[in-house]
Image 1 (cartoon, rainbow, N blue to C red):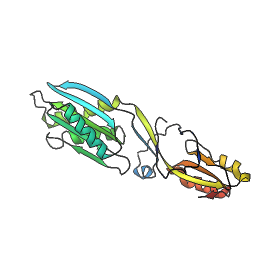
Image 2: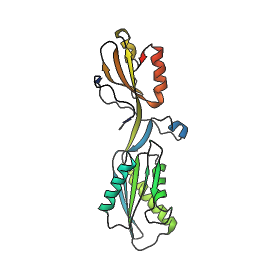
Image 3: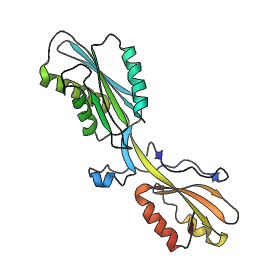
Image 4: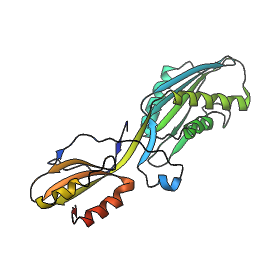
Length: 231
C-alpha cells in the first residue's frame, strides 16, 4: 500500500503508539454494494500534467488529488490565475466519502467538457481526484464531438501520468485484556486488515487497533471468541 486513510476516533494520548501501518493493495470492486462496505479505493499520489495541441487549440490537463470540494476550488482558483490568458478552465471532480461527482463546462457548449473529463476519472476508477483542462482556443472549431474527445483524452492522458495509490479506510477499535490474555490480543494482529497501533499496560491493559472497515465485524467476533473486552 502506498497511502492510507484512517477513519475513526483517535487513540487515547496515554497509549504507546506503534509505527504507521501499511499493506498490499486489493483490486478495486466494480460493485456499488461492495463499495458501500467500504474500506478501499484508488486515488493519485500527486499532481500530473499533459499538454498537447489539437487543430491549433492548446489543451493542458492538470490532475491532482483532493480531500474536499473546498480544497478543490482553492486549487481551481490558483490554476485560473496561473493560466489567466486561457479561453476556458473546464473541470471535474470525484470524491469517495459521499460518492459525490461534479463537473463544469466553463463556457464550452453544454456537455462537451466537464462530463467528458468526469468520464475519464470514472474510467480510471479513481476517487478524491480532480482534473482541470485548460484550453487556449486557436481559431478552429472542433464541433461537439471533437470537443468531447479532446477534453476526455486530455484528462485521461493527465491521469495516466499520475502515480496511483491505494487508500484504506480504518475504524479505531479499543480492546482491554488482563495480563494472562495478552497473547490472545497479539494473535489478532493481521496487517493490513487489523493493525495494533498503540498499547497501554496497567489494570486492565488497553490496546488500540485500526481495523479495515470491511473486517470490523469479523474482528469483533474474534474478540468475543477470545473473551476479550471491547471498549
